[in-house]
Image (cartoon, rainbow, N blue to C red; front, top):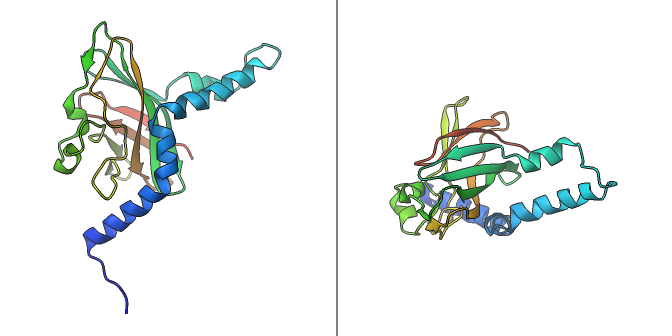
Length: 195
């Protein structure tokens, strides 16, 4: 006898499967160690080549962000990577920085206005990916308890302070790699998904 699930039950199972499969990947993306660790080996490798800088495009890409989104009061979100993963999702990594001269409270609007996300505190849960080609908008993935799969728990940044961040979305179709990242109170930015 087969088991039948409601549409909500199926979504919960999919979210659980994604969360379980992403546990290792997400922990590497969210704590701030993922981006910094990825950049260090590239720089070390280039330094060992007779002291000359490596002219490869990889080195140039590691130094320049894919996109920069300006927010209020000197806040800047620099996107360093947008990677399509085999599990059917896209992970966006970046750095949230206070480029101003004094401490800034991150606007609560960045977490969105959905009740389920608001219950879990400060996050980047209000972010969306817009695929203009297929006319679709993708929202931040959530686990079975409704927690957004993005950096959480921050409130403010001191002058000059940076915070490594990540956001995970369902992946657009493979033929849609040009998308726009949107985050409330920040200017939207076009990005290219790799992988």
